[in-house]
Length: 362
Length: 228
Image 1 (cartoon, chains in turn blue, red):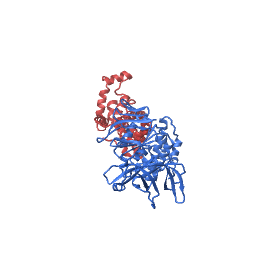
Image 2 (spheres, helix red, strand yellow):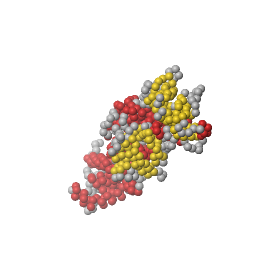
Image 3 (cartoon, chains in turn red, yellow):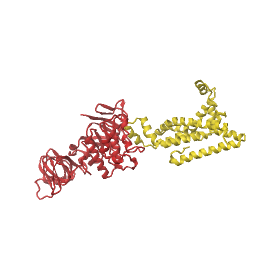
Image 4 (cartoon, one colour):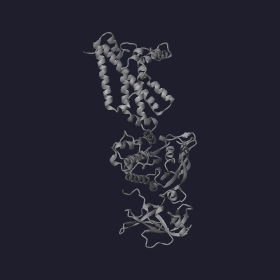
């Protein structure tokens, strides 16, 4: 199992210190999530070699040590790709020139120029000067350029932060396509949980320069004791398989461990697997199966855990098959229903969003 | 009226001096300007002051000390004679050294401010794409400052053509060896040969005007103003 080992202490401005020790999988997309000022970009800069951590720090990808006591590989020999928030395209080169910049400077890798142009939909802008591109186009060129250096690790620092909604979702789709088509591991810094839920396989939560949690996205999203659950938009992520289309009513059916979830219709072939984001505030529980309800998605679930709190509202962790849902209800409701661990109840899901996949049309 | 051989010699010598000086200025000034653009501190301030000094000193001051330094009985003079077999004072080489020092700010200052305007982020991006420092300079810095290089070289060339005090002090006035245009002009005036003087002076005015016109027309002028 390839991995990225980090043991970093790095002094920043204004008494800020990055101090973390962890091992991340060097496969798929790992999201680094945290509020601004939590050290996300500092961490990427240390990994890239653009910022020097303390001498005792260790940064190693598999068996290659990029930084260790008495050793510091300069950024241009690390074999990384870095996509910055502000694209940073070379203004004296056109799009194609920017894309080709890393080609002669790196060992040829598994990714070809044609593939990158296809995945990122860059055909129409190859001869354009980069200052004529839109923000979203610039960011796609920057991603392509980083990819063509055949990096062993691709770092992305909030690449969608400066984009409008349409450009961001286009870019997101391109990123999903990349991760589906290449084996290049990515570290994706973001403070947008929805982006993270769309992309990430693995999650590293960062706060004030320290790691608070790390693990698989699906696992962390459904836990009660992480920072994520305290956020207003706390949501569980579950996966389902498209099982059918309800043409008469315009709905798409998904199979969730044997239960059928119905969402607004999406033209996707049966058998395709998708992530579904279920916000905690849109899930309520009942002791008995409600009849005559307008809510379509009602599932028998087991209460796995109740948040122990004196706040007016609390979170429930509910198991649905082998997966978990979160429900945010008032403490008063929990008291009146006498809810406790291992109770069998019914969850009513008011809304569930199917997350986009690499093959979706916009 | 064709130019006489004294005038032709002076023109040839001036062009040769300005060309060699400009080449050396770009060669030495570029790394110096790059270094100055990347650092901030007392040392860089001191170096900047030294580089800028010819802008405010009377050229004769510089010429006087260089003359003393180049004399055959000094260490520099002896070392030069030992290496090349010829005397340094009153030679073409002395003129080149003096001109390089005298015109240095006209090359270093525009380059330095152009280098400072290159976003650090672009160089970082180039580094992550596999470019070594020298490669980054060649593939990012030079293309982005190409115009400034042209401007700096032109200013260095023009300023060398236009100098008088330094070359008079350290070159003497040897026709065909150290008698450049400005000194030849001075000679013509001294000996009341106004026809020749007019030709040289008028020619220099046309040359300077044309050069400055093309510089102002072609570039955003803020990039090459010299700071004193």
